[in-house]
Amino acid sequence: MAHLLLVEDDELLRDGLCAQLMHAGHTVEAVSDGDQAHRVLEATRIEGVVLDLGLPLVRGVAMDGIVVLRWIRQRLPHLPVLILTARDDIDDRVQGLNAGADDYLTKPFEMAELLARLAAMLRRSRMPAFGGNLQNDDEPQHRLRIDPQLPVAWLGNDAMELTHREWSLLTLLLKQLGQVVSREEVLALWQHQAPEGGAGSSSNALEVYVHRLRRKLQGSEFTIRNVRGLGYMLELTAL
Image (cartoon, rainbow, N blue to C red; front, top):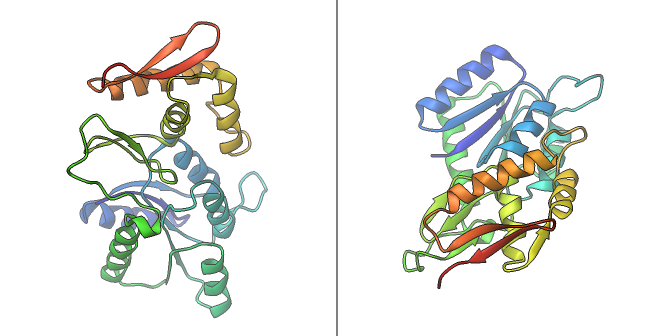
């Protein structure tokens, strides 16, 4: 099962869908507009998105499903997205698929079909040919592997539960293993990834994320060391 983001502005439909998806074994973050969707995707490890196209304005700015989908494709190009909408014209379907949707289902719909399409979409997304990363049971347990597109990482054969920011920080540290990564470098990366006005791109927030990553790396050969006045360094403490 997967951790899903449901973006739907109709409260009754959102609550009903959320209950059905959870009954099917998924965990669900449910939001009503594009701005909330951005914030969840920045802070939470999401494995699939169910996205309505007809979303409301946010502070007077148009942020419909196509805008959200393009934002996702810029930042998380392999995150699977299923559009669920009342727009059933062929032009709408073509626009949604061309914008990067993995599947397109129109309302009204049968829940069994939605669940089947979701399962197929998630199954494809986990295959290497589609940007996923299948695990090898023979990998040594100390091996740290990070998916380059999705907020997923493994220590040996154990999946790490990472938020998007934890994943981006760990990716940056691993790319420069044994070298200092400055605070400014991390904050600049987060500022680039965050939506306009996004919160959490501060020095204090960075300390929190470093602390969380240290806890998640406990018991492995990897540790994050503070380099006073310079930044952080990911080190292998044993081989």
